[in-house]
Image (tube, rainbow over all chains, first blue to last red; front, side, top):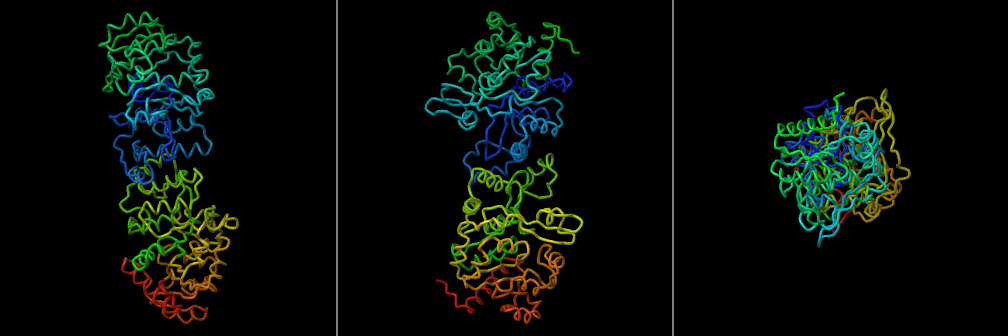
Length: 313
Length: 313
């Protein structure tokens, strides 16, 4: 599973209830990582971890459920960027990650140890141990770190360009390429293609490993109609001249994705998906509850198994 | 004021109510500093800061009043050393200090900024910006970092040796020597001489600056009878072959201290203090309340002013 944050986490919650968790490997975007108060925060990794551990906030989907914010309140005396809401329990994760990084441990090992401490059997891998940062160029605001754009500025403004600094030099984290090579199938859950999936695909060797693997690849649209389920994807698609619809998203995955799931309300777009060389799968893609997550994962798996006769061996 | 932790903080609370805070400089022991979870903790500096800000826990005297421990509870998944109880609000101080140190700022500047954020006008200086660590050698346990000895092991075991690693190379923090040179008087509040005051005096140039300054130096006994007001000083004195009494402490300050305050219950020791070349001052030295702190500070100031005709100019 190539994962961004909340959408991917919700999909994985469903996949987990269907498959042996140890058979799942999640390769997670770290382009959203950033430093707050000198602490290394990996928002997408943590969202996946907390969700799979059953510890995530139901809404907004990130952070630890029932967390308190006493430390953040005191940090406000020293820092302006308390707009990034880190709870007391959540901070323990970032304090430990930062400490371990400073001791020279690679992010991938730290990520897996944190997952183990949360009782997670699924392998969670950062896309890379090297530093990649998603930078969003916004009209009249300039180049913003992704969290500044998304959280501080609430995704406002016209997006002119998106860059992933450091991505050319970044190598896939240990285990990433072999997970792709050995996979029976690859799933891209409903995530923002431009800032959640493309950073992963831009890391050297990942896209070509996917193409060489000849394994069925399924993606789920993150849009319902012209609206993203979450986040500012519509602004990004529009700003960069793409169609704001499931078709616009599918086009970004052309040549890579075999099966493209889109919402029942977008059923009329299915022929256009097909014309891109992908099999459309019309289903309910919005995951408000664990039941929705499981149903979507089951529909997708059933279709992939049928399509490619993927066995559960 | 040459300061350790709780005893010094309580004395300073009294001094503050008598003098313009801007006329006071506190030079604080940093031999107790240590790293927990990768965060730089300065226990004595923080105790002084929180106390002068009116934010300290009344008991045990360290930490922030009314703090919560949610983050520490989560850190326990990753670390064994959660015996060092850092509260959520307290952690903000350590997170900021660590961040600022990593950005290359000197501890003295960081310490003063933290104090300013807490609304403190008194100058709080770490004894040195360089790393000095108090190591306590304990029978059958070996060499322990001071916090391991004091907090984790609750000061148990026979003390065989005390060392200050790094102290030979350590330079006084900017402002330390000039504060001593310009002082009208120097006070050593009731602190453990061996692990709170000696680290300060061992930093290159501090002891000789004190001796050259020819300014009256007063010390307050940290013992009442053979018992320390707080902490394991009696074990240290005994282990290292010193008399466990105010006289034993006074002997450690011989040649440095002019006026030595001891508790009314130790009045019979006054002649022996005098024979060490110090003026004894018998008064109530236990500071349970701010009123006690103020009374002790006032008694000491009055006596020093009388003795040396120090003016308030």
